Image (cartoon, rainbow, N blue to C red):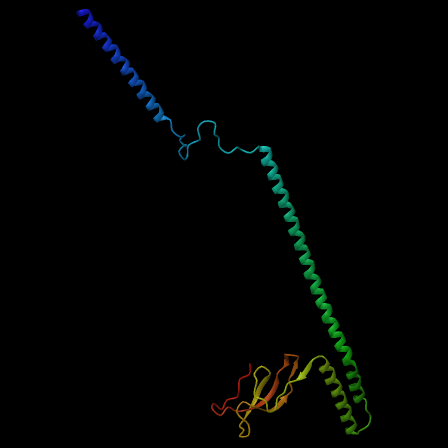
Length: 221
C-alpha cells in the first residue's frame, strides 16, 4: 500500500510539473508575440538606426566645379554690365551732339531767312532822297517781311486790347478807371508781346482797367 501511494504521488507531481512547464511555455510565447510590433521610428534629433543613413555629402570636386561655374557666370555678368554702361555713355554723348547740331541748323535756317530783311533795312538807310513817304513805305515793307518770317516759325503776337487781363501773357504797368469796360480788362497795349506756338516769348506790357472793389492794378506773375 505504501509503494502504491508513493507511485501515485510521484505520478501526480510529474503531471503537475508537466502542466506547469506547458503553462510557462505558453505564457512565454504569448509574451513574445506581444513584444513583436511595428518598427519604432527614431526620435527627432537622433540618427536613424540600422542601415538608414542621412543625406550624402557631395564630392569636393563637384562642389569646386559649381564654385567655378558661379565665378564664371559672375564674370560674364560684370562684363555685360560694363559694356551696357559704355553703350549708355556713348548714347548720351551722341544724343547731346545731335541736339547741338539740330539747334545750330535751326538757328542757321532762321538767320538765313532774316538776311533779306537786313538787306532791305540797309537799302532804306541808303536812300538819298528826302521823301519821308518813300522811307516809310520801305520800312513798312521790311516789317511785313519780318513778320512773315516769324509766322513761319510759329511766332504770333499776343492779343491785347479788349481782352481780359491774363497774368500768364500780360504785364500790367498802368491802371485806369473806365466806365466802358469791366474791371481787369486790357485797355491799351504799350509794348507788343509774342508767343511761339503755346510758349510765351515775351509778355505784353499793357494798361488795365482798375478793379472797382480794390482800386489796385492786377498783379502780373
